[in-house]
Image (cartoon, rainbow, N blue to C red; front, side, top):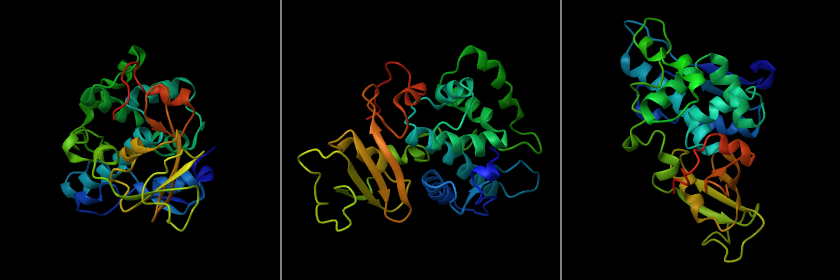
Length: 267
């Protein structure tokens, strides 16, 4: 199904920003689209390299574009090795099997730039791909400085742990949060997690989607948690993998596509 039909109210634009603090600007739109494909939101388009353009503006536009993809793969699918997971998904047909992968298909794959993310993951983060994929991506880094080429994840410092661009939800400062019984709007039982496990808990947090909400899931006393941001709404229903220990919103088999055997949980 064409993206316009799948996401009828999705707009694409080049954010005009000079601030690196806007790197997570696309994340609210991402969670809204995952909750409702008809959401009226805007996602960044990938900027192209043009001589004479302001470097800071194009850098921050590219940062917003690629961190949104990375967050979908790492924190919705729970993948420790997103390139491996994407390759398996594409080998399986690249279908709209779950909302996170549907969004990836219609935005980043639809733009035609997904191989650049795969190449960056392999070259800069030690991710792994089947040998059949290596020939498809090995030439991409040579196109970094060509006029008119899309700006890929290289040189954005995404792989640096201290920047927080990809690690914020997992290892960043914990946001103000509350553990609630399902859909309890009063917050009266939010002081501490319940001592007796409930069938499903609600983790509600306040503030930015870049803060450490994903890392906070390690304190959950049940294997399933619905995560909700006070400003932006539902972030999804998360399940703890019995194999990897990580949290994800998809079938366990799909989650394991992007987890290397023996890699275990990251927290």
